[in-house]
Image 1 (cartoon, one colour):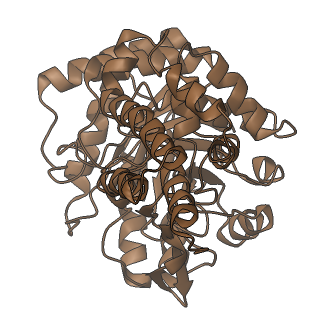
Image 2 (tube, helix red, strand yellow):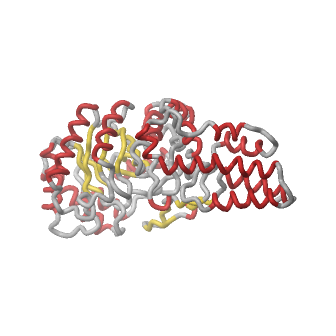
Image 3 (cartoon, helix red, strand yellow):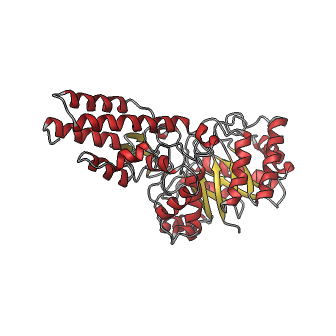
Length: 429
């Protein structure tokens, strides 16, 4: 069986523009990706109105996408998500929807029941039977995958057991690890679950996606730390891309490259990928934070603290700017983030100048005002001040939100202004 190795368009929010999706498939082939799975949550025909057939213009785009995939050496797969309102008798419209993809030439298909109300064994059996009906109705040259309701788990639930028992042999199971977004994914856990279920698990990693309550953070940093043994414990990797198709390429390329050679240092891999994108380095350093590493870039943080003692490296970093050599289309996509970076490039020197040359209490007032304005910014650069990552745990069969997903920390600006104010006021904090 072929190992999955690619990306998933499965985030919440407007799906990609057609041209951007075609470009992504071409690009994916150049970085060794082999799979592009189409499953955007807010494509109404994919999820909310899944019974409705795709209109001719959408089918024409999907045909173009399949052709682009064939030219790039990338398997393009399509997933339908009927779980919001699945009912008895729905096998026929599900099969019709999937057959339309098959008739276009798609040979990778899937049915997903993620992010719908949970249930027990009875619901699991119904969902599994739905997938089985679709498989039975289409030719046997299709590679199938499916996503259960309990796709984020560290144990076999009653739903999951019944779901898998109802499936025909050979179907891969999408799994995000023990949590919806998993900080740690033990290889031993993946092996144990696969053995108990009799199914190959495909790791659908929720990185670099940044939708929902994570949306204030742009994930341009290194691929999260994963056990090298995980690569052989699962049936491959699909990275869930973020809402920005061009910006998602860097972290996705770093993740796919590390997955292909897990003996490499993941940060070094990321740095090498960033170096290959002209002009992106200033922003990657500003947007490298993630759930398990929420703080600012360590080098920039050290420069910020040294700046309070007269060091000029942080100000030189900002003086150099963030747009030089950046491709025009990437600069357009990243415009709000670049503007936020440039606000910091203006504000940090103001705060440092006020700290270094205080005139009575005015220096402290200026630093405090810079900090206040920074706190009001929607986009969080140079560390995570607030975000909620969908970290979940299991209590029996029930899935619950985990408090560990709440990130409340300091950005580089927070640290700089706080420490400057402590020195100016004589308050050690």
